[in-house]
Length: 256
Image 1: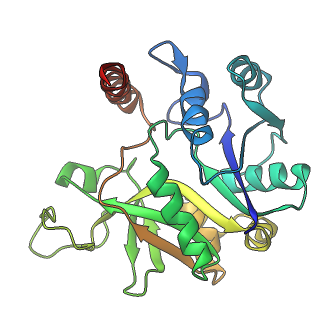
Image 2 (image 1 turned 60 degrees about the vertical axis):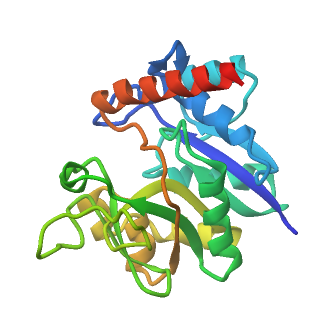
């Protein structure tokens, strides 16, 4: 079986939360939390942080992370992940992009994304049920509509799909239609190369969602379903909520 490269892309220029990778959670930079989480996953053979920021690189190396310096001109994390994969050589046929603002991403979500690629999709990702009407309406929460065969139909910051009878969480979850996208992607090397070669697409630029580039060009994104997944960090409010979640996780770990 081919080796799997994990890449944590990190840039300082996030519009909604400037300097996001270095925002502190319990005194530790956000990107470092994500790198630690990814490094511990048995499904990833090697994990690197890909960044254009010397400050991010220094913070990550201080914690022992391997860092790959990449161009400041990349329009998306996938573009940055491809440069890192190129620099590290061709032995990694599978590349996993663990977005740097997902400090509690679970190994089962990463494994689920990888499984979609191994089952024949160009790209694998995953999703979990939306839990509240507020989450459905929140533009910082990315939603995905999924076909019965598992492939993504569309990703949006808007409320999709529209439910005529209003929002109702699927407590007896069987993979209901109102899903939150989880920030992890797995790609075959050749699929990632094609994705990046296409360049930003109209829908990608309209929604600010890189995965729409692949869909617009007919690439098949498999969406695995996971019962639950902690949210990522996209706003100052998310940062506060994540710090509490990490505090709880650290407390539970200390009690074991």
